[in-house]
Length: 402
Image (cartoon, rainbow, N blue to C red):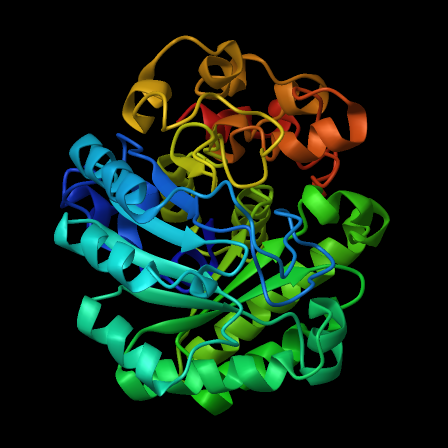
């Protein structure tokens, strides 16, 4: 995650993270990305079932019953292990997590164990009663997916009326006093909708939005041609930065993040340099703390059947199953060579990634995209939009040596 509002608008300083010692167990949620121990945030896909038909779904979800999901007691055993391991955040996802009737019970159990529980949902199944339950549980956050305004979103989500129901879900969360935000996956079909998303944030007083770059996994693996060209990505990121700054300057700040393309970090830093901002050095320090992509280290995934993955997009790479061994043992063991290499991936990336001046900041970006396009986990990420000049070590060596 690249916190555009945190970095560009100065809502977070390096001293904020240093004050807590940069330990995951001590950091407030908005500073977790700057931890030094990188205890993994866990995405738990508690079900594969979903009531929508999203064209980019990494889980290949359908609205059918699946028989291989962890049951409630198995889920609680997983949560026991994660809490003891020091996992700071558990993100309940799917499919659509709300199709599981025991979601409130599992989320409440996670909170009781001392973890921050958040939900990633399409929002269409949230009503005032459910929102009230989530508030009573102590849910930290609900992220609701919207990929444009009504026509665009419903086409992308594959079900007419999805936008209207998601907006009802947002209003239910706000009325219950739950922090709610938007999740938007950027692609050729919807990226011109970004300004309308900012308008919606302001109009509905929604405090947070995450813009996800497209990852070629699941049904999204067929959408490589629907990803933005590099110049379009730059234009989209500029749009996000400019609208974030505009809201901040008008006294209506929002928390704005981009996700799944860590080239956004160096790009933002270079933008600050070009503007002559005295904040540039502070931003570089925070980006170094963030460390870029952390799949297999600072983020992990448990699938509906108990399989463990480096993140939610690595479903084709399984490191073990929590029904056989606890997640903590799988994660810290040395039985899988790929998992070990991901924890030190800067040693293994190839091509322009290996030569990049910003490798310590970006972390080699997204390996799943590299594998999807090049057939090689360690090849350069094809979605990196930085030019050869912008990643030149000779040009920036005086900065990176500081």
